[in-house]
Length: 124
Image 1: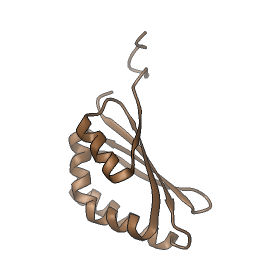
Image 2 (image 1 turned 60 degrees about the vertical axis):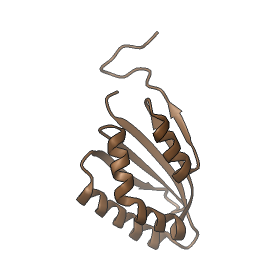
Image 3 (image 1 turned 120 degrees about the vertical axis):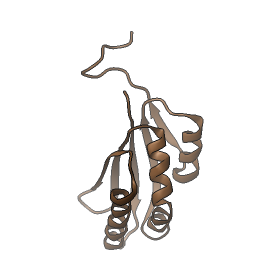
């Protein structure tokens, strides 16, 4: 696995769906304009409007750190006003610096190591 993949899960505050959508759009705008190493940044809202999943992929950890610096202020508004219960899942090997960042901004992380994919054989 040559890139870093993440899934973020968050809950949307009751009655704040429209504000959440607006702030998510602002974060997406910043990402499009400023990020140089972001490969994927897709937002999905649960049918009932109570939860959101964000699927992210970066060229490497530096891409995530770059992204974090760009969206920090807008993300702070998102969680202050519109979202809560932020949880992260990372796929692949991550550094201690990355782990510390996620603990600070997302309350922890679940890590999955790469086992097998279409382009590799299983490590047995």
